Image 1 (cartoon, helix red, strand yellow):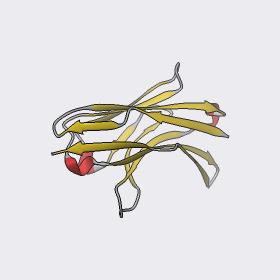
Image 2: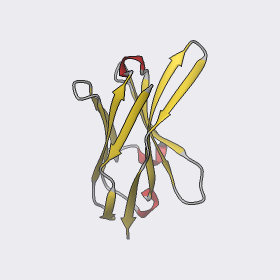
Image 3: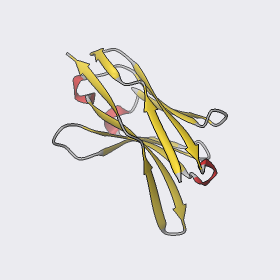
Image 4: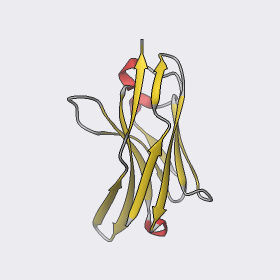
Length: 119
């Protein structure tokens, strides 16, 4: 099992920045990829950014050039640096840890943290 705790959300004006943190505990050695998702009211949960155990990253087109995902292995923490925030970035942001066992994917979700961007 993997436990995740997110922090760093809040209210910010458009153009501002926030940094989200996701601290992992438990069977962290089994994690393959760490991801950030977001879900706005009435919408589906979408992938925002991901980072593999080897450090490879990928981003949703809507956040490329503005968001950066990184990880501190010594602290078992993943970060999402969000710059040039827009009102459409408003959502609950969720951290997800992915464990792969052959073809089977296991997801471990955090509780989410609210990000609100005012215009």
